[in-house]
Image 1 (cartoon, rainbow, N blue to C red):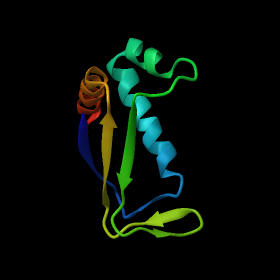
Image 2: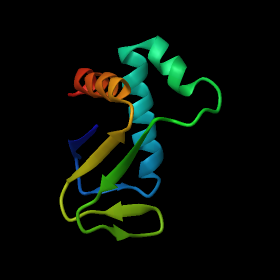
Image 3: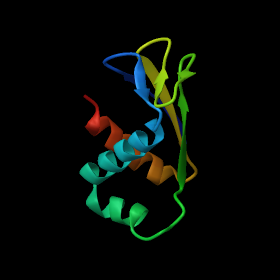
Image 4: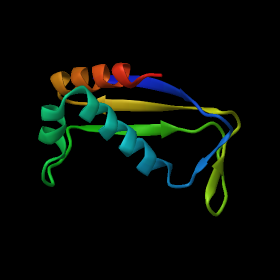
Length: 97
């Protein structure tokens, strides 16, 4: 299962370490949705059954920032386990602000 999420930033710049922030967002969303699911996914050093890709609009990389064409970006989330995908999708919906 694959789905796309859209995000809007306060401005058109993000940290060059944006992937760490996205992983934190994923972990936060899952933990707030279901602590047992979070433990199942993140306890130990197991391979995850999902991956994600970040789409940045015309990025310009500086030493510590990424400047985007607009204040929006998207993430494509993909998982081969349908049940995991469904739970993570619901976790993201619950976290949506």
